[in-house]
Length: 249
Length: 275
Image (cartoon, rainbow over all chains, first blue to last red):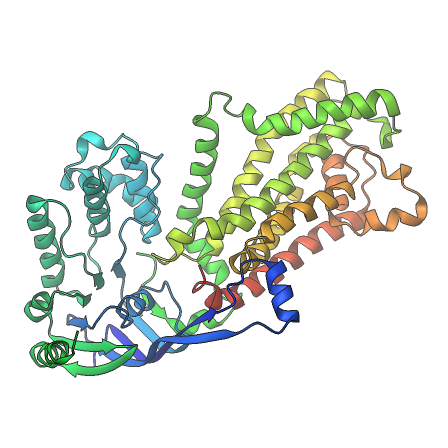
């Protein structure tokens, strides 16, 4: 019996929005005394359950604000679910909001080491890999230059190169299949395809429905934090597209 | 990869996971601490002197005022400059460590909302960086001890004990403050005021003997008095440290650290959404 790479059961996530817009102790004390403290709770995810088998590619689709990115962050351990339970088996490579912790005053090399370590690898390993990473990203000439002299395209390339420089068991991807200029887009797309074909379990969120239907084995449709449908990508995309076309936008 | 199995329910057990979390991320902690220190030292022309400027100026001014005009009687007949500088250095260390540790999590919000790193890593790293900084600044004090003929006793090798206690104390306080600072931005300002109050209640520039006896309990219950006296005893001797001060120092460090970690990790699930 093989256990699923990811299992999510009854996952709910609550955002508590305070209407009063409290930012300081002083305001909090005043508003509490005046009984003006009101919270509005918003369930970004409401009872979401699914399983991703080992080696399966699982696509998630849905409109903006459906809770897709929140679900990604829960799988990446960044957000803990308010209720329910998530279990992820294997090493995880989160490809969401790449480039976290980039420090503009530090050099490319220092940032490669720091970013890789933040992603859970060891500094020793990152120091060994740094040149290879910079080479792959076409940034060898800039490896000792502070990041503030990088263009935004160079930053994106560096972040992508570091994030994908592993062989993860589980890949969580949020719309980052390709970055940079046309030539780099082809190379980064190929690298992603290699990672997927290597047999990693993949959860992929995309607005590009073509990407989902081409890559995914199964798909889930999420709207307002709720699962509307889970099934084969073609069925789910078909149903989703019909509501989008049908709605008077 | 450090984490090969993730169960969201395991995060519900406070205290149990923190120690192993910190150990698993020791590479990252080392990296953050060295980055903190090198950025501070390498990138300015004054280098290491920059962080010493503030305590040295304060000491200079107080030395002129209290060493010449008032003339306190210092326990053990220690030269006033040695007594004063040791006090100012330790209090500056405490203030820097608490402020840095308390603001570390809010400052790292950009990282914590994007990748998984145990948040306590940032608070502890900040407190470690302040501790290393303090150890470096001790060189000045030791030079002055030599110049004034106080000398350097062998007990100086035990100074890491109060430093480790201070590290635990400030990391624990830092976590408490960090949790509150996510909710309210003015917590850090209030912390600054509180630190100032506590430092006046610590005999840095005055001896405890000038305080009327019926008020001395206010200084005795301030844990920093124990830290400072133990530190002075070790670094130059004859400071009048008593055994209860050792006990109070170690106990307060342990209690504050455990309470800080416990309350922080219990509230983190609700905090991370607010970042």
